[in-house]
Amino acid sequence: MNTPYHKLLPGAALGLMPLQMLQAAPAEKKTDVRPNIVYIMTDDHTAQMMSCYDRRNMSTPNLDRIAADGVRFTNSFVANSLSGPSRACMLTGKHSHTNGFRSNETDVFDGSQPTFPKYLQQAGYQTAIFGKWHLHTLPTGFDRWSIVPGQGDYYNPQFIEQTGDTIVHHGYLTNIITDRSLNWLENERDPEKPFCLLIHHKAIHRNWLADTCDLELFEDTTFPLPANFYDNYEGRIAAQQQEMSIASPHDMDIVYDCKMLRPDSRTRLTGAHIGMLNRMDSAQRARWDAHYNPIIEKFYADSLTGDSLTEWKFQRYMRDYAKVVTSLDRNVGRVLDYLRDHDMLHNTLVVYTSDQGFYMGEHGWFDKRFMYEESMRTPLVMMLPDGLDAKGDIDLMVQNIDYAPTFLDLAGVEIPSDIQGVSMLPLLKGERPEQWRDNLYYHFHEYPAEHAVKRHYGIRDGRYKLIHFYNDIDQWELYDLQSDPTEMHNIYGNPGTEEITRRMMIKLRDAQEKYDDPVRHQFPITVQ
Image (cartoon, rainbow, N blue to C red):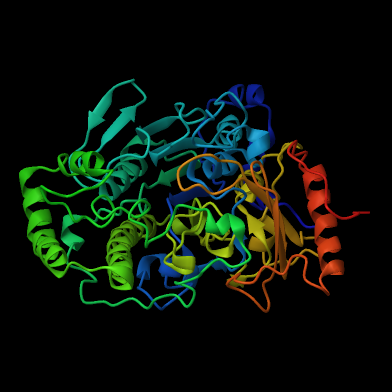
């Protein structure tokens, strides 16, 4: 039997003691050397815009540092591709139907339920979170927290403090979240105790407002159109009915998303856009106007229509998105430099991920939600503490419900039996367990809602993906990811796919039973 990681560390067994025993320990102070955890999560950052995964579009040198010095997961996925539900899955180690936060529109996170920060607190860890929370309740399980209301604002944002006060901080949000996180590391924590710090960024969420120092970046870059940019969604009824199209003036707004604001602009989101710009001080707004006004003037003079307008919007979207990633990457570098300069990397697990992937023009889309690859996948890289020997790529399938049990396992805390995820710690030791999962379950619940993506659940294994869209629709989709990695050809019902379909439906049924998902439907074929 392999020795648990925490038992290799002096004093780490304290993490397994009941809280009463910890409180009754001798008064003499000893440094607890269990590994620290720094978990950095962004919003809507996709692997296509992270150069250790994809070099076509931009460079992310600091994020690449994590992968180069540690591990890169090449099959990392989420259980529900939506901000709040994804965060709830991460905190609890449970699927959305189990943790109760299925939808941003209708649900409120039950903060009284167990989460991994609470378990770490009970084991003697200091816990803190700065940045985006987005669960409609205040954080629990943290010794220190400061969060942005709702989605937060990129410029001069408000923060809700533990005191109950709401305070405006001047500057750009990504910088401020990093500043406050580093200040906690430097001045607010007890250096004798291990810690778990969650750094949760709003970036790179819509509508992709760049730091003023980055506004000129990528303006000379022409990004390549994805091969399926002009997808006609043949054989995919749910895809035909979505509202996340770059081409659509209703979906990607020319003012709110593309920043083409002038007095006579016609847009359903003008008020929201002006509200964001009005948060700027005079110097910030001057730099903004100096950059965008010439672009606005040329755009309206050119009077683009049809495919020319759609492709112009794509380039505007890609440039703004890449600028926000650049700021994020720079700030991740600041965190890595701090840990290095304070000799903490040797005893700290550094995790970088996003709450889900995102469409960068694939299928003609922006946003997420669908179980298709671009949004179900999420980047995941880790820099490992001493004693964990994995290096390079890990290709086994992992999911965001696995984060909580991994952090508990690393800290020497027993993983509760009701957690549905699996600890990745063996993978971080360089092992390749024979019994590791060979498929993943996914369930998207939020409809009707923004972007009009139908409710659906499905199963993905190493080659095939089976999806059922339900509620006001009853459609099945089946993809062979080996021959059709961009998921353009729904082969469900095609001659010769009967046995594949049956096998995938068995896996789907087994997953729904394993995770006790109450939303189940009659299978259209006999499954036994």
